[in-house]
Image 1 (cartoon, rainbow, N blue to C red):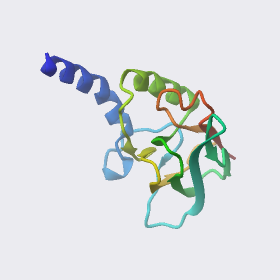
Image 2: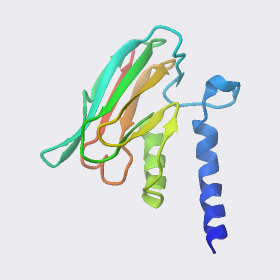
Image 3: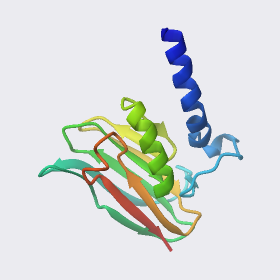
Length: 157
């Protein structure tokens, strides 16, 4: 029975892994809705993002970032909250799909080019190059967190 459950889980996650795997490792067929993984060896504008809970809400501070098309950003993510949080960068539609999957597998953790899970009082970086103009979303897709206000937007001009 455990093998069947594991096989079902792996079959469900395989499409996500294919979409989420780094594009910088020679997998040129992989696409991301919000641009592409950045090159940590190249200059980037640093944008600190704090995650926390406050007054019954879950927040990203800031919850809005403006960038220029082609700009590379180093998001410095810090979880100052008392709960685990994540930062998933994609289109709102892609995050909606991923949120549905997170409802089925709420303990899923991320260490992807466009998303990171952070335990409490931890920090990490995410380097991203915004190659597409438009509005994109960053959100915590742990069940209940996005609904409690934990989402923001990146506007690429």
